[in-house]
View 1 (cartoon, helix red, strand yellow):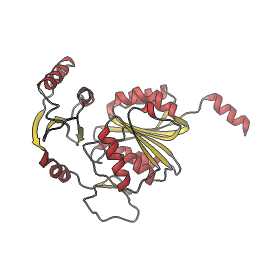
View 2 (cartoon, one colour):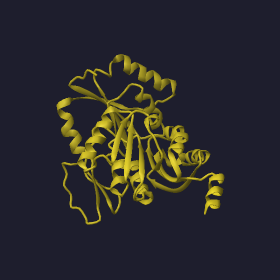
View 3 (cartoon, one colour):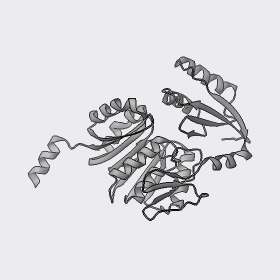
View 4 (cartoon, helix red, strand yellow):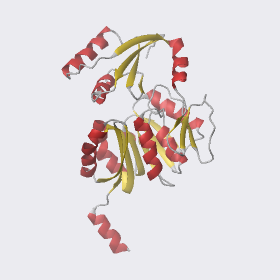
Length: 293
């Protein structure tokens, strides 16, 4: 892709239409997203965001009856790195898990699991509630020796955390090239080598089975992918899902049960939610298991 020396930033206030707007924007191939508590942003090269693209986006919003106000700003490339780095500071996720960028040093405690994450316009800085919720539930359900799948890996933070919690291997998959590159860079920053593989594309590229699946995407994407995720999860395997509002939890749980996954625990922060679950053995599998004992 030919790039210019400036970017376009679209900033949207948080709303119930976030997932819908982001799905629309994905069709225009943004450079990346930044997720904050009260707002989120999408970034485009100015050569991408021309009059035709802008008009198509406005028309798509109109068709979906979206009237949410948003801000558009152009800024120069030379200001990007400084602005970006200043916005990323250490985040304590739990008593044990601490996320920090490589350019920030912090006083670490003996029990700390430190994740050194330098984001590159991809999700997973630790600032958004869904990332924190995913990490807290992962800390509760992860087991030594796990084989992990991280769907929509972004910076790779969830898979890296699982490996530092004792997982034996991890696969991160993301449709975006910059996410694959960023996740690979963050693996190196955390001393993660061959135990993690990062794939660019859909989960069709992935071969299971896995004992733990982590998926922090959107409500609709989670629900659409659950049949595949359930197939990739071995019997009694665990799954952690987020990327949706608390009000969407009932729909997600219903979809989990339809696909042989039993919800176990909910966590909430602000209006966001994460759910852990496990794959339920089919009755015939349980019966054979009992007869073999």
